[in-house]
Length: 96
Ligand SMILES: [Zn+2]
Image (cartoon, rainbow, N blue to C red; front, top):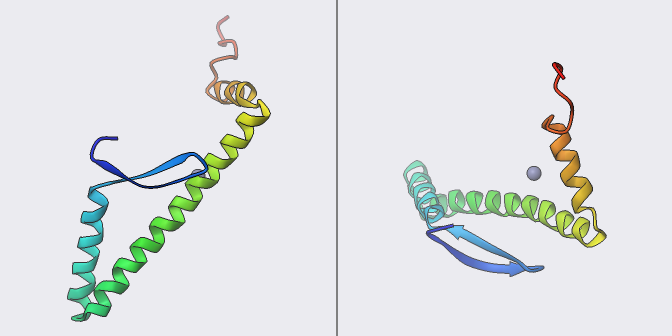
């Protein structure tokens, strides 16, 4: 993805963050400072966003690690078939 930078790598999965995430952090730091009038308020608001980011990151790592595990077990094809079936592409149309 253009405009993103790597912040780490785990289990062969590169973690990249888009630069606009820094804008989000700056926005919440500013909002936290305005609401509380203190640096602690700015840091707290920023920490909440970072904590939310970490939760989403762990959730996505859950998906990725399960996918890696399934690929190692050779479940790629059956998983693909299941997703195609759910889209209705492998079932006959009512008119045929
Ligand atoms: Zn999910």
